Image (cartoon, rainbow, N blue to C red; front, side):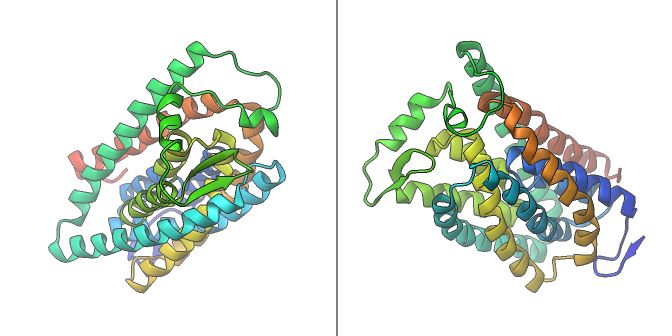
Length: 305
């Protein structure tokens, strides 16, 4: 099928399948899925600027579906999500401007590919270490994981997180839903970094923000998943707008992807009830690796999948 906005020929079945898979991943891990969607779109010939902008557009609707389900489980901290949205929007704009600079320089695809590989591999390496260590040291609850059980979220990185939470940088913010008190500036910093990667690599940058919420802010994994999706609605909407203004969004591709993503998002959100936090984090590990593998293949061979 030909998409005139981006000038790409892509199978709609491929797009629906990619959307469905990303929907499941987004609902389960609280991510936009750009570490899969971006490389997957790039692999079928879309330039990175269109892959990034179009991915942002499709995850808005998917995230709305997933947040409704997570909200029903009590896994959304609205106060935290709204605060983070402020920092994320600023970071997303800077990331989008960097993409424009690289477009003008003519080396956008190479630079974004290399940055993607480094980021994806770094995240996976750290999370496999932390989650495996946590699982080896902790006895996890059985049965469904929600409510108070979801807030019991052991981590081998907890000692570092506790030190960050004890930093008394005014103003301090109390998050009753998450059970955390922390400096506003630390929240905004995490959000800004997530937004920067969102604008630069596409998606909601949940691959950065969700782990950061757990390891830096100390948010329980289930709440980090739901809250990140809520925040993604805001940040991805802004990111879609700013990329659309710059001509980086193929809305037709996004709509086709959303038909699969909306279904997958509900499946993913419901599935989180059956996994403890460390297991969700461990299951997350292969996903950035897959994204990195796709980017490496495309970069090295110059071929589309």
